[in-house]
Structures are given as structure tokens and as C-alpha cells.
Length: 522
Length: 111
Ligand SMILES: Cc1cc2nc3c(=O)[nH]c(=O)nc-3n(C[C@H](O)[C@H](O)[C@H](O)COP(=O)(O)OP(=O)(O)OC[C@H]3O[C@@H](n4cnc5c(N)ncnc54)[C@H](O)[C@@H]3O)c2cc1C
Image 1 (cartoon, rainbow over the protein chains, first blue to last red):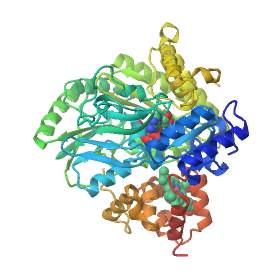
Image 2 (cartoon, rainbow over the protein chains, first blue to last red; image 1 turned 60 degrees about the vertical axis):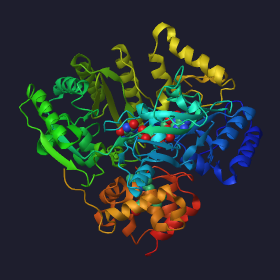
Image 3 (cartoon, each protein chain N blue to C red; image 1 turned 180 degrees about the horizontal axis):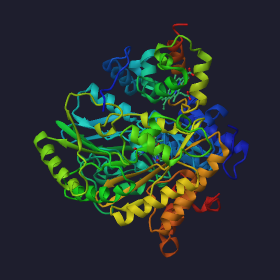
């Protein structure tokens, strides 16, 4: 990938900045060849790879090096884009929002600093992957479980900083954060919460500290580079029980969400169940061309035929209970009773006991897996994937219209519907996956248009997204429009106060520093 | 749900000890096999998505890179740095050049 300079920076000025970075991290860790730039682009880019072009990457090995890079970036006016492992597939990978930014790749900072088995937390650097942490737990026979996302190839910290989620009772990853170390945009270093006490003993056990709490201000944020995080972990359960069923009709999602929500609110279920439609399974085991050789999506009748043959319903329901067997059995009875009010379908019950294998295709058993990435092979070619993810109240009057509306939109734009609902008590997060072949320009165009229209539809209905791909960071921010975008104005006021040169992640989540504000929607 | 099927060559124990190298690069040293497990194993062990996609394209007998005797070093380097189909490219932080050399050396040992 050819070099795209940061806005307003000349080639010699850029070279001077790179030379200064080299003096901090060493020659090897400033990655600025065409080949390197390519590896920091979005692997799933819905369009040309240089739309969100990194100018280079720099890979510090310590917090001190991060501080030095940030100070130099201010001096040389170089926009930075920090990533932990940069595997944010579906949301932009490692690529920056502002073309010409330098990616700060924290992958080399991959120390596991502490795991407290008794109190259930770990303290890690941003480059620790889900696989690294798992290997550490296994090697040291530590009886704690992490919570893993569908893309376990990423990092524990990066995922939590984008408010990622997993499938165990600790699935709300950002909620597991307890205490951070952060390099501010001027190079200063802070510790949040109780960590603000020199020699603190309770940094990673109490979330709020004293006075205003800051952790969430550094999540989906451009206010700092997070260099260390405390993450709460779940004590390894003695046993687990999976209750599975495949309800047949699209409309079933209404009572499913409401029933699960009520069970969740009452503590009968303590994970946030993920309910994908059966297309999710199909997209993992087949490609469009296996079922259909015409243009456009697989016709509904053919999909229905396939589901019938494979004995799949419309939705895949898997409710997993964790803990002592007598308790999970008792909870299972309550769940069955609640479901029996809506269906006479029995649950398929699959018990698990500590020591049994934990298969990689079941992230609710918390083993890192990269297998779900395979879904992006559905369309063929260089597969790509976008996730459209509005947050809804967990009621059928919200969920059903959203389901019908999106499903029709998928058809209208020539895609198979792939919606899912993650029910966490009061909310149902509606992740909709759009898979496209990057080599098919028309399909990419339709994927983008579909994303636009889904965003507009959801906004009209009163919903917004929990997270967004680089290409929609501004459009989604636009939908948070109360009082003439007062929240964004506040975000940008804070941004300018903390980062007057606007060097840190300009445009992240639609917040632009005054220095680059003209790039909004650019 | 079926029991997971693990590769004949990679017992669960080996897969895990290989991955452990990721947390401790010093322990893996120039060991191509351990580095392959740590850097590529997530997708290229049995049931990994790389193996699944390759099984479909090249047939099950060529799905596991660790068992292949027809890979050439230049090809492996190219695929890793440029990506291929569903395989995302890897950066020089993910796999430094020296590690990639050890990995390609091991993957092409049977040629
Ligand atoms: C098929 C598929 C399934 C997926 N399933 C899931 C899933 O189940 N759950 C889920 O959550 N996601 C899922 N994802 C999305 C995504 O791939 C994962 O969330 C992945 O873990 C993110 O990559 P990462 O951890 O390397 O984060 P990174 O790319 O490192 O970070 C994400 C963003 O956070 C910010 N950031 C990261 N580190 C720092 C830092 N230290 N300081 C300041 N800002 C920082 C940056 O803006 C960065 O772009 C899925 C994707 C695909 C394609």
C-alpha cells in the first residue's frame, strides 16, 4: 500500500517523525514499508484497502515507550491510532479512522502481570491475546475462566475497550474492567480508581475509587492509550448444563427475548444468551455457491428446505447454566416451566462436568476460538463482514418490528438475513451480520447501502448502535442527536481540552478534535 | 453436539503446550513447530477455520498445514504477509520475520 501522509504533513516532516519514533522503539519496530502498511489495513475492507489508510505502524514495548511516542506525536503533529492486537474484524481491523494516521500497535506489550485466583481477576497488558491468557491459566492450573468473543484471535483488552462481549456470565467484557493505567494525549500517565493511590492494594477489586470514576471514559474513546487493565474473571464452574432448542418461526423471537429477559432479571440465567438465526450455522458449514448458482441471495424456499433437512428451526437457542449441579438442575426446571408457556418443544439437555473437554465451537465454555471467522467465507472470494448492531429494549414490541424490517431490507439489497439477539436482562443487542465478497464490487456497494439504510431505519425507530465500523463511526454518531448533538459537543470539548493538537485517534466514534474537524464524514 | 475431533498428529496436550509458547516467546526460541502452534494454530489445527477452508478447497488430505509436504517457503511467506481468501494478513508484530523463517522452515521440512 502506497504511503498516504497525514493531513498537512509533508513527506520530509513525516520522515523526521518516523526517525524520531525509531530512536524510541528501535528500527525494527517502526513498520513503514508498503508491505507493512498493507498488513495494518482492514482485512475485510468494504471497498479499497486505502480508504482508511495507515501511514505506518509503531510498536512500543513498554509504557515509557508509549509515553515517548505520544510526546513525539505532539511535537511532530502526527495522528496516532492505538490498537491492542488490532484484530477488530468486522469493525475495521487495525486500520485508523483518519487516513494517514500511524497505528500504535501494542501487540508487543503482552505481559500477564498478575492473576489472582482467590479474588478472580487478572492484570494484563494490551497485547495479551485470548489464547495467551488461556495458555497461562492452563499452564498454571488456575481455576478461573475468561470470557471469549467469537473472534478469539484478538486481545482481551482491545475487545473490552470496544465493548465486546462473550457468552458466559462474564460476557459483558467492558463491565469486567476494574482499574486501568492510561497514557494521556500529552504523555502524562494516570491510574484510575483505587490505583490512584501510590502502592494501592485494592486497584483491581473496587471499580469506582474516590470522586468521579474514569474507566469508561477510556472505552470507545480517544482520550488516552490504555497500557494496563485489571479484568475480573469467573471462578471455574464445577459443572454446566446447556439447554438447546430450535424454535421454528421467525416470530418466535418475540416471546424468546421476553422470556429470557425475565429469567435473566430474576437471576435464573446469568449469562446473556446469544440467539442467532439458523443461517448462522449454515454460513459456517457452507458457501452460497453450494446451495445456489443464480445471482443474488439463496431463495427463501431453498433455505427453508435446507433447515428442514438439517432439522434446524428458525432460531438457535442455547441457554447455558454454570455452577453446582444441584443449582443448575433447579434453574433448568424454572426455565423449562417458563418456556412451556410458549412451546411444547422439549429442550435438548447437554451436561458438562469439570474435566470434560471444552470444544472450540462453543464459546460459552470459554475456550478461545477463531472458528466463527469462517462465516465470512459464505460469499466466496476475499470474504468480508460488517456487523450492524443496534441496542433494543428486551420486549417483543421492540424486537419483532426490528426483526421484520431488517429481514426485508436484507432481501431488498440482495443478502440472506443473518440477525441475532443477545439478551442481557433489559436489553436485546441485535447483531446483524452482512457477509460480502470483497472482489465483487456490486456486492460491496449493496452491503454498504444496506448498512446505511439499517442505520437510518433503526434511528427512526429510536435505536442506536453499541459499536461501529470505521466507515460508519460518523453516521452512527449522527444518530445520537438529542439537543443538536449535545453529547458529541461535550465529547469534542473534552477532546480539545485533553488533546489540543488532536493527535490521538481523531474521529474515533465520531469525536473529532478541532484540528481535524473538517474530516468529519470525510 | 459431537465430541471435538482432534488431529492425529496434534493431541490436545500438544496443542495447548504449543499455544503456551505464545505467552513466553523466549521458551519458543527458534522452534518452528512451537511457533507454528502459537502463531498459526488458532486457525490451522484440526477444526480451525483455516483447516476447514483448505479442506474444502484442496481436499481433506491437504487441510492440515502441519502434515503437508508440498508447501514452498516463498508461498508461505507471501500468504502470511498478504493474506489469502479468508486468511487475514499477519503483521511483523504478530509474527516477526525471524519467527516466520522458523515457521516456513518447519512447514517445508518434508520437501
Ligand atoms: C465472525 C466474527 C465474530 C466476532 N465475534 C465477536 C464476539 O462474539 N464478540 C465481540 O466482542 N466481537 C466479536 N467480533 C468482533 C471483533 O473481531 C472482536 O471484538 C475482536 O476481539 C477485536 O479485536 P482486538 O481484540 O484485537 O481489538 P483491537 O482491534 O485491538 O481494539 C479495538 C479498538 O479499540 C481501541 N483500542 C484498542 N486498544 C486500545 C488501547 N490500548 N488504548 C486505547 N484504545 C484502544 C481502538 O480504537 C481499536 O480499534 C467478531 C468478528 C467477526 C468477524
